[in-house]
Image (tube, rainbow, N blue to C red; front, side, top):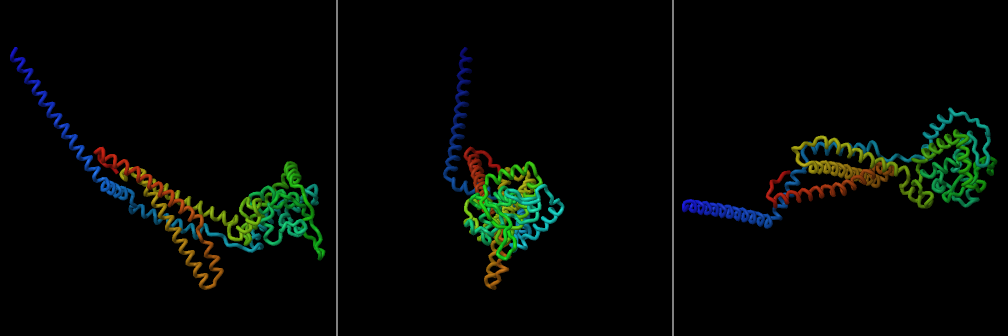
Length: 397
């Protein structure tokens, strides 16, 4: 009995000693962890600098990336000088030549006979639709109605020349031998004798715009051929004027302010240049997209997290766009300086044609957007890895 009590006491003593050792070990572990966390807190700036270095190391461009960078830059430069320069502006006659050739080919195969072979009020016969000029080009008689259509002003004061409204009102004018001005007021146009006896289209009388549109809708249902020919005529006329020296107003601008539309066009802000800038931007985006897709195919898990690899892709796109845009600005500036120094106006006009406005806009977007993306990825990286350090976990890049 005494032996059993002795054994129990001995066993309890051993358990107490074991628990004490475990408690001491636990306290020691806690103490070490406390010292480690304290050490981390004292060296936060050093740790963050090291993590920053690790991020830069993980996202720096490799030899393959540099190859992509040069390839992307080359594609952007080729695009700038071969695919998307501004078209040379021509005289009205030169600009209309191609459209007139196309017009002869199309209308030459169409019979010009219709049931009413004479143009009358709100009705232009097929022959006049095909063979006569568009009625909204008429300037003779505009002074009688104070329309101010002399010279190039008529392109900015008639809705037929508007690249947006023209498809409706220009087509309607062609089918009805009328002219509609910037205020949606319409006028009849008919051949009238000039002082020397020659017949010339003249603005002769006010017309009802709503009635004009009703006549067009009714005729389109009964005589769809007239509508088709008028649409073709409208397309060809806009094409003939698009790249002339005077150009065409920005879409919809005529109805807002013909004066502003003309001033903008005289300073190069017109439909033709807008289309070219859009083309430049679209091609630049297409090249960026292709490079990003192809570079993405080279990703391997051994490179680390996918978002870090995406940072490398973004750097390639930003740097290539920046190099291409900078080189373009420098090249154009050098040519313009030479043009001024040599008083060579033609050289200056040709040089400015290669200014990559659309590409520059894409470059600015990439700088802003990619910088934001890289900053976000870096912040996530730092937060994750700093958390791992605080928790005593291994850093994985």
